[in-house]
Length: 379
Ligand SMILES: *Cc1c(COP(=O)(O)O)cnc(C)c1O
Image (tube, rainbow, N blue to C red; front, top):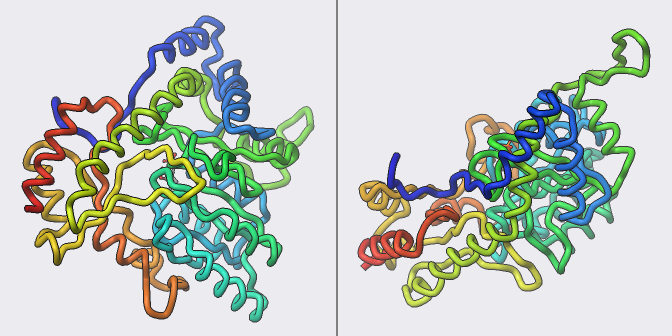
C-alpha cells in the first residue's frame, strides 16, 4: 500500500488524540460523554442548524431519519438513483419500497422533472411517498430550490443525504440543512472521518430528541427496563466523537485542499476534447470530496475501465462512478423514473464517469503523475 496514490483516505489534523485522551482521563469510554455532546454542538454550529445527533454510521442516521418520519412496511420512499447503496438500504430495513429518481446533467443529482412525474403519478394512484431521499453526490448540491418546491407542493418530507457534501453550500446555506432531516457520514473515505460514524441534523428539536431515544434502544422513562417501540443501538462512541471534534477543526482546510485538487485537474483537462469535469451549479459551492469527470469514449478511444486499469498499473487508485441503483440486482423489481423518455442520465454518467484520486494528502507532484498518465492514455 505504501506510495499508492489513493482516491480519498483519512487525513488527521493533529488534535484528535487530545480529545481521545480526555475521554480516557475521565473514563467516558461509552456511547455518551463530553466528546459526543461537544461534537454534536460543534457540528450543528458549523452547518448552522438547531440540533445534531451523533450516530455510529451515516447509514444508521438515514435509518433513524426514515423511522422518525414514520416510514413503515408497505410505504413508498423516493430516492436518488445515482448514489451509494447506503442511501437506499434503510428503506428496505423498514420494509418500505424504494422508487428511484434519475439524475439531471447540471448537478448529476436528482432530476426535478423526473421527480415531478413521479410525484404526479403517485398522487394519482394514492401512493405518495412518505419521504424523498435527496443525495448530494461527490460534494455537489442537488437543485434544492426546484426539488424542495415540488416536495412542499405535494406535502412530502425530505431527507437530505449529505454524506458526501459536508461543508458544501447552496445559495450560501449548508448542504444537508434543507430537508426536515439531513445526514452526514464520517466513514474512513469521507472528507473528514471518525473511522466510522454519522450525524443526523434538523431544526426540529423534537425529532433530534427522539432520534437519541431511538438510537439508544428506545428506553421508556421508567425505573426498570421498559420499551414500547423498536429501538436501535446507533449512538456514537465518545472515543470516536473525539476524533470527530479534531477533524472538524480542519474541515475548512480539507475543503480548500480538495478544491485545489479539482482545479488542477480542470486546468489541464479543459483543453482535452472529450474530457468533461463534473460541473458546479451556479450559486453552489462544492466541497469537491471527489474530483470526477466523464470521458467521451468515441473521441478518446478509451473507456473509463481502461483508464482505471492504466492508473492501477501505476499504483494509482481510481473508480467508476456509483452504479445506478435501478441497475442493481437488489432493486430489480423497483420502479424507476428516468429524466425523460429519451434519456437516462444516471446510466450515461455510469458508462462514462470516473472518480480520480482526490486524497487531500496527495502532493502536487503526485497529482502531476496522475495527470500525465491520463494525458498519455487519451492521446
Ligand atoms: C458514505 C455514504 C453513506 C453511508 O455512510 P456510512 O457512514 O458509511 O454508513 C450514505 N450515502 C452516501 C451517498 C455515502 O457516500
